[in-house]
Length: 224
Image (cartoon, rainbow, N blue to C red; front, side, top):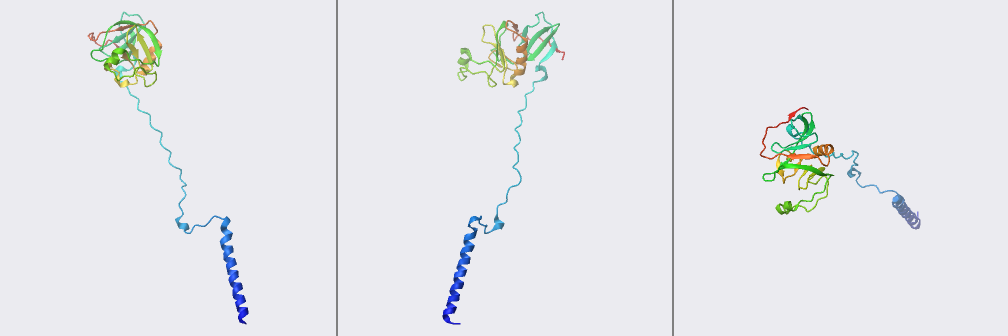
């Protein structure tokens, strides 16, 4: 074989190799590139993420047995429908007649803020607004000047206004204060109890508030 033929064959072989290489590198352009190290591929999560547990509801405050709403024996000469506030024992009685009354546990005025006398319910309100009177603002200047009614309002779910005084029978968003002496003279019930009482009394209902010094024994004996 002559030198010229050998050179021609070598050139043809080199050109063929280049063509094959070019084809090898250009053909996969449309396909996704293969990873160099497939054993390092990240694992695909097949297990669904855990579902977050629903938050538990706050435990409901439970009143002591003596402060829960209940029908009791109660001897009085007052007419059915009369409300009697037993200040020393922190009870409110709604006279039912026939020697019976509905008894509610209440919170009363703290030392120096209890009062006594006879009033009538002059107004009723559901989810009442609260406007602290000037006397209260003078003692507690940090109080809001007005608060719209709602679950966060200190007057709670219902209010019954007593005569022309600043005092009310109302609910509370702090049921743990029932049976204690914490208010500025108002009489508070749990929201559940004040809603019940509200449905049973009307404007014009007589309200008798016994003095703190009238420390008679608890007259209400439970019926149910």
